Image (cartoon, rainbow, N blue to C red):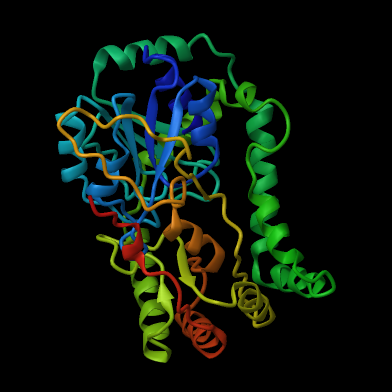
Amino acid sequence: MRSGFDLFLSEQDWPKNSEIIFTGLTIPDMPRIARKHQFQPVGVDLDLSKLEPTVNQIQRLLTPHTKAIVVAHLLGGRLPTNEISQITKKHGLLLIEDFAQSYKGQLISSGDVAMFSFGTIKTNTALGGAVMVIADSKLRKKMVSRQNQWPQQSRSQYARRILKYSLVKFISTRPVAGAVRRLCQFLPGQHDAFASGMAKSFSGGDFFKKIRQRPSSPLNYTLINRISNFQPESIDCRIRRGKLLVDTIRNGNPKIRILGDEIEQASYWIFGILVDNPRNLTGILWHHGFDATTQSSLRSLASPDDKNSPPIVGQTACLPPAGKQGKLPNIDFMLSHLVFLPLDRPMPNSEITRMGDVVTRYAIPTTGIDEQQTEYQC
């Protein structure tokens, strides 16, 4: 998906320092790619219950330099984008939707661009590759033409990737994972770093050289096969398991906050809770046999501190309180209190219930942020 986003930006003739508004919780590579093309990424804060930006927050960030809005559909949910789409149409902006976490078997788009990832830990993984749906046929042809000039990924590169993640899968099996957990007990705090390191895809080397490659023939074949033979019942199963964990936690301690608990069409691609003792709770869960983690590839993308550009004609300037510019308080709060709980398919319902019981017994509920503080009054 990084490759596709790079292709897309390569075909834009926007002025230098044009702005792209991103959902403020994102992988760092996406704003990195924007900066490579000399565009300015701007983050917008999120509601922690719905994991969506409000229209007011987006409008506050609009300037004459804004060219596009990138909306990420997070944690397996689907955000309503009608109001955001109205904003983009009103101001002549492009709407780019990131479905990396929310693929459910359909390649759909309601905006100008839709991006679907089939990377290592994604739903229906092909261990790489992505699909982009481009509304503008001329733009699509230009992107394909540019991509055809890239070198092709070798078969051996993809083969090494398969071997690496076959090993990861083997390590994740219960007997082996148990041994790894016991080993990590002698290395306090290292289990999170170990799990995170094993999942990295683009560490080391020239990042842009790595993403500017055409997929190998085996990867293309695997991707087509995975899309053609998608099994929707896997999503239904994941939703049932997610709801079981939600119910167990709420019945045990309703004060524990479940991240994105009001997301529409939630499919529980990953499952997060917000607690005041994330590191301690993670260690306890590992001790009980559950590979929870505080690690994530997602980061906070703050707005520039010097974002004092004049508002779009017809808008009233609406700025955050003094000293608050450049901050995304909800996202920053989330990342400092977040624990991801494993919800892999092989886990029986009895283990999901047991994990929920451990959480309700040892988690310390947050008493923190009032999300309304990010709603600025004009």
